[in-house]
Image (tube, rainbow, N blue to C red; front, side, top):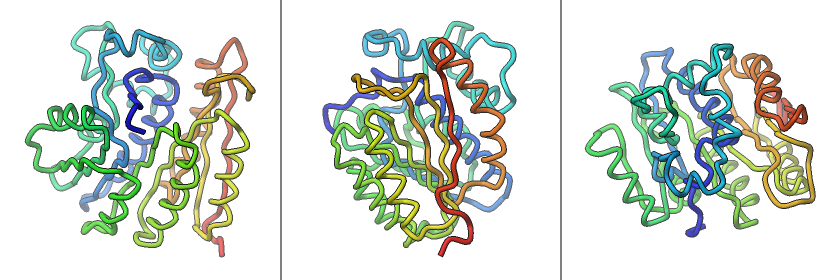
Length: 283
């Protein structure tokens, strides 16, 4: 939605989960020398000032990256993710949060490509500035759910597609599922990471049912909640559904999600969920 600005939410618990999984997947792809292509359907401006007016309005980062910043007991994968964030902060004080484009850029190798889609005209201008003249990166001023489909399959025949719409428009739930299924049909060996918020649980259950009956194979869900589902306004939990995940991801999430639920949850109310929506032998 053109009114959506991620700067209000930068560094919150949803970013922690989404970007932790993003760095895990890209790290796994980096284990082989063969090039890959990473596509981000909703890239945003890519860089956020946590001491700026947008981020300070609701201070959502306080319940996300802010709770992790000074801890010395981080699980290894969380520490690796945090070390990337620290590269963008010149002092020990947390003041800057890189979005998925900059996180991916940090992990990109010379032979890899990063394709970024962003529809918001102001956001895409900022995005172009931060990636500058990096020849490995291409920015598209476009609706990512539409445009990214045409980018598949990538010439590398190896890669990740990150799908994270704002879901401010309720049709995004069905559009995201339909797009993911179509993408998988074009590029069946690719890895896909679909982020979702939990605001009205019935929408999430419908999304899960649609994916579990889609015919796609090897579909895993990783969810992190700060508090129990509520009829009140706001996101109480979020998750990432991964198609063709790295074989190491589920085991790592089983180690990390209980820790994150305990550290980030509201007064002991945090929870997590790991579920297989379709296994590798799905029909």
